[in-house]
Length: 210
Ligand code: ADP
Ligand code: MG
Ligand code: MG
Image 1: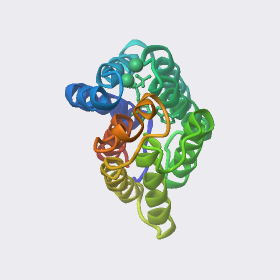
Image 2: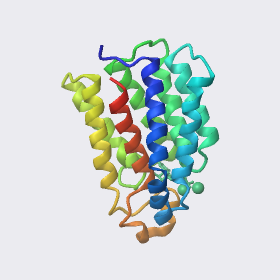
Image 3: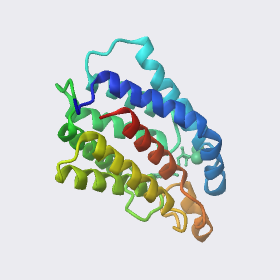
Image 4: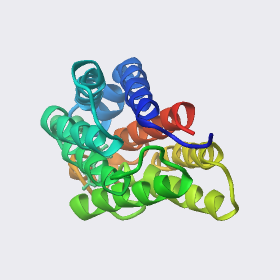
């Protein structure tokens, strides 16, 4: 079936934790260039704690699980990205209430709610050199594929590829949000760490959901 159940969402978070741990040094280097160097350890810690939840507790529903992931990210990631990714999962969980198997339409609603939450909280616009520069094109690619009747798996593949392209496109940009914005023009020439972690989350979603 072209749906994602609770187990699939737990695989997403477990996969993201593994990928972010493997990428922690790289994300740290990106953040050292234009920030304070902690993005890799922040993400590895927060998603590591979130992945452990599934072993510690039985969750009754997808939304109960994802809300707990969101709260865990808020309380363990820290920095700018913790509240933003935490908000993403808290809002993402909302449309999943009463959904046992998320199909492409439920997933689209959740993805919109999650990304809208990041924008509401961080006020980033496309081109500000943030995680939103990976997430905005991912959302658009997901919607385009969905409008053409693509499967959840194919929508997620399109979203992950667009997120990777959006990540790469942050390199020449001058940061206008977060710590990197303190560098002004000197922030150009470096890929944004948050856009990189967002691309990892979408890539993991494409491999574990749908
Ligand atoms: P901190 O900058 O507090 O050390 P992190 O290093 O964990 O936090 O996260 C930095 C990332 O957060 C940036 O690379 C950027 O993608 C993202 N970010 C910062 N501010 C915002 C914002 N206002 N909106 C969206 N994303 C943001
Ligand atoms: Mg940092
Ligand atoms: Mg920091």
